[in-house]
Amino acid sequence: MILLPDEDELPVGAQVDALIGEALRESVADVEPSADFQARLAAALDAAERSAEGAGKAAGAELPGQAGQGAETVEAAS
Amino acid sequence: MKVDPDRELVERARAGERAAFDLLVARYQRRLLRLVLRLLRDQAEAEDVVQETFLRAYRALPRFRGEAAFYTWLYRIALNGARNAILRRRQRSAPQGVMPSQLPAPVPEIGTPESMLLSKQVMLAIDAALEALPLELRTAIVLREIEGLSYEEIAQIMECPLGTVRSRIFRAREAIARRLRPLLDLPVDKRW
Image 1 (cartoon, one colour):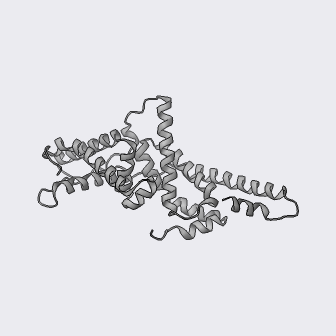
Image 2: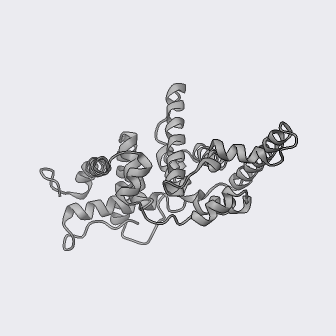
């Protein structure tokens, strides 16, 4: 339960601002990711990681004899 | 600018250490979800936006130069995602009414029936007022009140001047307070 303004303390405006803040925080206090969120996110990041590795290898393969150049190219482009 | 609390993890993640990025995910996933859920009011949609936020951050990490703190950068990506989700909703023209069930109900606590009823009415009034706010005002007050960010941090995230942040938060509070006046029996003729 949120606390309502107390007439004897802060100016009413400050109390109302505090009340708004408290109510907003309370409205999301129990928010948690759903059960499968972590798994979905981990899978998506795994795929992105594999894709990045694949792109790095492909870049390296395009430049025979210049190992490591692909990664440097990505860095330079950034 | 204050020291980026994530700097070490970001550097390790940029060097290719996936576990470091996973730690950043663990650090921010709930905060981002709270923020985006407060803006979208739909858990599944908010989770999609948060997932996309981390994916975008992961892919763009090699280009992250650390000019802003990592978390302000991450919040910016998330807010862009939330904004796009709202635009997509509008384009679909699907009903996007208030869905109270998507947000957790306030935890019931012991109190008089009257005070509990008033507390619930206040929560609903604030909820409705927030929903009616323009997105920029809603974002600013959520970043301030839920995330506890400073005006300077909010200005960085929202990419606007400090004075604009102050104005947005002031206007948001005013709009919410207007809805509370009848409930709290407060004077209507002045800013409290």
